[in-house]
Image (cartoon, rainbow, N blue to C red; front, side, top):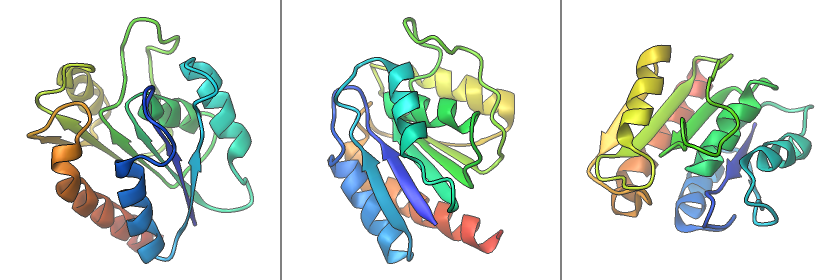
Length: 166
């Protein structure tokens, strides 16, 4: 199984969260790929880039942070990932074409910070509530760097749960 990472608008494919989570995925015996979305700031162009990068012959998981979480969630409606792990997802924001989401899978975990001043935590609460999804709200800001150890543990458990449900 492979994990595809999509970074946020102002970060890159090798940021601290992606490095930490990729390490956990590799420890779990998975392969990883971090998509470089820095060529465009357009979220929907990033969705197309992610979809073009997926190897359709293997099982995969999509992980995204902020705009990358929007990208992963939106892409998941056109493909069949085994799971989604979304960090401070940029949902319901002005300037994003997609405002209504219909996830095709139920293995979705959302992590958001109470002090997020970029994407209101209420957006994740609304999405999680509407779709009955697991939501972890942590004492952190939009970048979630102060909560990285907790996020790593949540991701480790997420991967274990996905593998045990196969």
